[in-house]
Image 1: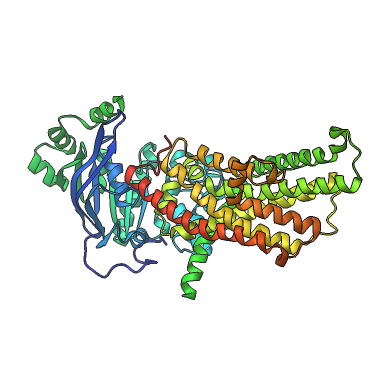
Image 2: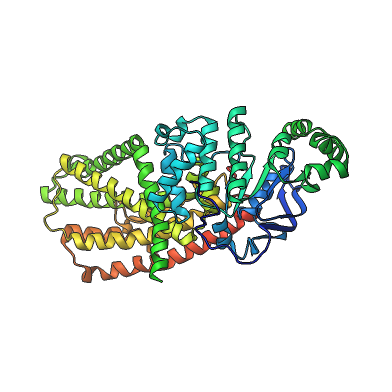
Length: 277
Length: 278
């Protein structure tokens, strides 16, 4: 049995507000050269409805992770407003934190501690008792294909794919109302990628979870997301279902939609960003 | 109210349990740290034993024994307080190094509860190391504790711990404000406190301007008080003139440190410094 929305530990707001509503979000950082600034997120507005999987598609450096950090209370926007289930991420920070969790591109664990130790610790931070956490962890990790005899090994001894699955288990363990997945399958082999994608889709289908997924994998966006937003240069340049995007922007698939909107193929955009000094 | 306190206690316990688990997993490094602490304490004690040889003077055995105890109280008390300070000051740097900082700061845990849990965890660690050092040193060197008032000494150490928790929290702000140089700044603070607090010598030997600094260091009062308790059996009532200044520093430094930490966290979230390591 997975720890998900059908057994929430936290009372959800009673309002029928969308899961996430961002309006005019701007985030600027100091540039590498003295006196310059980089506008990482530029006037982004979007709404994620309850129970949907929203895919945020963009090349490296397009502002996806910055936006996720703003949504998860780790960054304060310079302008704009973000509401999670009607709660403001700044003024209602602690309440928002109880409703969300995030999986980042790096697994981010205490590497010497085992998967079980890390997850029991993570569960405690969200008010899940150690006994409950152990039962839930066994269920989630088992479903993600991790054998029970690996639960107590130091995480540094697990493969990158396994570590990422443990990171996903950490997020589900806390029964978040809104799950922020920041490139959860980047760097995984094909098999692990498919397992994680299936798990995410099953979770939504079985438990009606709301998921915001960032990716620079066109296939992943098409497979998982109900609606897709395309982020380019910090701006949300298009939004809709795959069918709506191909119909309105033009093109046979997401690849062509992306190219029409940004002037580049997604891989090229990634290479340009990586080559930036 | 009671339910809320229990809930916060449970959240704080998460950090204690994590610290203990990390101590177990990094046991070899902890062992190195204990051995290092024992050898440095022993080295300081041997300086005391060698006083007659070094000075070329005849020194009464009782005087030498008192001198050794004087040095040992300073070195072991400082070991304890130093660990409390370091572990708390390193909260940010350590989690950045592990890569877990964003998950800790994203969790629905009030900052006071987070820091309180870390403080309790570090007191456990400091106590284990300091007691190990004390017993190991006593195996090598005869230590005369026949006049010691252990209750007074422990009370003073408790008061000093509160003050050092406050100083540690305030110093933990540096890595939030300056991602590359912040931790080094915290170590400089610790070194300055060591210099002016009379850990190995009376503060009266310091230049006047450093003596002025020793007045605001809680360690000055704690170590002096512990010496009087362990060497002369002083009770808490007679130690009150040394207790209240340390208590005052704790009463000011904990809420002030917490306010500074929360402000530094906000700044880090505005500028994107929470995760960055450079």
